[in-house]
Amino acid sequence: MKSIAYSIVIPVFNEEGSLRDLFQEILTVMTPLNALYEIVFVDDCSDDTSPQLLREFQLALPEIVVILTLPKRSGQTYALRQGLDKAKGSIVVTLDADLQNDPADMPRLFEKITRGNDCVCGWRKARQDTPLKAGMSKFGNVMQRLFTGMKIHDVSCTLRAYKRECVSRIALNWEGQHRFIPLSLSLQGYKVDEIVSNHRKRIYGQTKYSHKRVFRVVTDFFKVLKTQGRA
Image 1 (cartoon, rainbow, N blue to C red):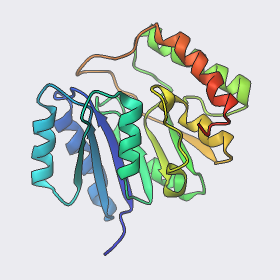
Image 2 (image 1 turned 90 degrees about the vertical axis):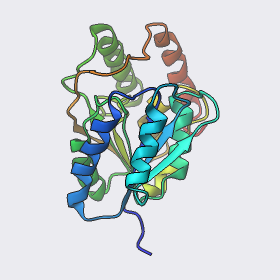
Image 3 (image 1 turned 60 degrees about the vertical axis):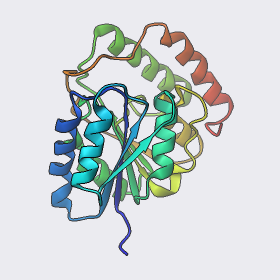
């Protein structure tokens, strides 16, 4: 059997409005590549019609669609961990399900991985979010560059690609740690790069962001530094 070239890991929580469009966009991008790939949807206990839509996708394309259903609401970090552990591709991509990440950016992520990078991040240079959310994210990015010397402009963007070899080294042990994956890998000596990604306005669903999260993010940042990204 041929090995899977690409795995696309997508956490899902109540994304019924965006899933059909997202699925079609991924197929449109991936089909011309003529490579084996899988889409790993991780359903984080959605209580809308998202589970039914995912089953519909799997029935249509069982050779491509993988569904992981978590037994209880666990958050994005745990969902990503489960999806990454399940992924079989030589290159693994993560992206959000709300359509703000653009699947059309994935081939450029793949191309940069083939240049010798271990992780390639999306940079939401023209970010389409509320001023508060965008401002707090920018503050966090500046802080990480200041304290660590990282050159990445947008360390918290979920749109990322990873080489298979470094996936098992991604520390995702507590909720919120997924925001620090590029820093974690960089601290472990992996090569991290970025592309300017197309960030789109939110059309479906509601953001889970809260200004109260800022204080925890700062604490978590120093926790990652202390453990050198390994725990």
